[in-house]
Length: 230
Image (cartoon, rainbow, N blue to C red; front, side):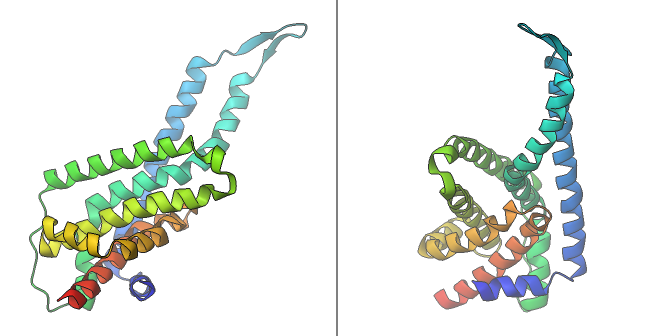
């Protein structure tokens, strides 16, 4: 697993990797900016300019105070938002990343047929919806698990990301049914690799490179396990 990750890192200078990472940065920045703008609009629209406090009188500036607080809130929420952002990003650019890895490390492989755009979009929307639902549900559990919250976050998202990344990468070569069967055989290894991807997703800036590194890592893992299986 770590050798697969090391190979992925060694290819970061690849022009195709850099182009996709730049697109990912733009996409993530646009989505986070849009979410923050929507939050500010909601504060401005539904927060009164002044409130009356008994024995004190009218107090203004509440909307400004909440606006500043919303900035800190968005920094925290960006950690959770990067998981679905990364998943949506990978659904769109997985083929390009996997092909770049195979061109460099597995040049003798036959060409693959790209998945239909509509099928890719449907799979991406379904998976992002599942991620959002489970992460929102997990927010209710974090206060009860205290210092173990990061472990819950990494474990849950590592499982989901590992499963999705591996199946998408493997499906390109062996079909979806065979990819699912292979994932069951190596489920613990794939989960561990998924955790390796989920942990840095909680670190701002570094998390922008994770989607590309994740696909590259699972591409190497698939080919290594596929050779071992055969």
